Length: 353
Image (cartoon, rainbow, N blue to C red; front, side):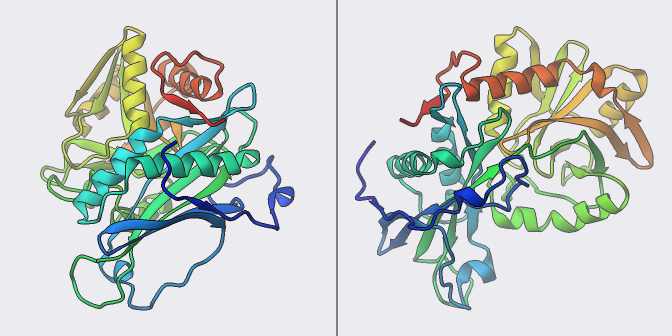
């Protein structure tokens, strides 16, 4: 790894022995250490791994007031021989820097990012659950740190990575509501960035959908309220017979790394995959006719999540998830590559040794 002057201060009081790896709810258990770096005077420095814990933030922190905050989500798993594995970490580095560019934040050096996740995972390797489908979830994020009330670009930032051992994000098939009264993002906005504000704006529509018995929102485009974008926590795929379709990324849709990987796997399998506009009417009509055979989401947290039903304007279309073939195949391949059970022919994984 490239040296960046990284300092490592190990904890004297590990919490590992208190964790029940048979019951690890997503995002509520945190490992012993975190990575921290600070930006000031035009450069990143003070890069360190230290015991996990709170840090002090000024009440006038500019990120809290004006939203300069971005993040990533990635996973470390264990190979069948016990070696920790990272999945396409360089793409997460690229994407957080694209998010930073959109929010006028400084890029974080790729060599420092790769060193950070590598050394942190090496240190926290015993926190990685052994069972396939579980993982050590890494949350890199960047926030503005200026202490000033005024709408302007911050001059100081903090970059942090912490870790959570996690089980599967969704433990049951999902019911989605296609929503045409709220929007997630518009072309030219921040939809393609993993910006904190995107998720804040989704909370009320999701809450209302859950009160109606749904699990998540399936967002429609901001201009015509007609074309499908993505789900609240995932990209989305549709299977029409032997053809798989996913919405094309148009600047308002997150360019998912799992999405990108699934598209490649489908091509490797010789399956027809289309990235294009797909309307909610096309989906609902095809479902009624029995032509839409599978719907599933993809994401780092979810991996592949089956959709059991879609509701739109009072019409609910249900799907026979027991008959799904494409979604379970894709999930098995991703999990198999992450565990070393399936050959990594694209060199997507990095062994942490």
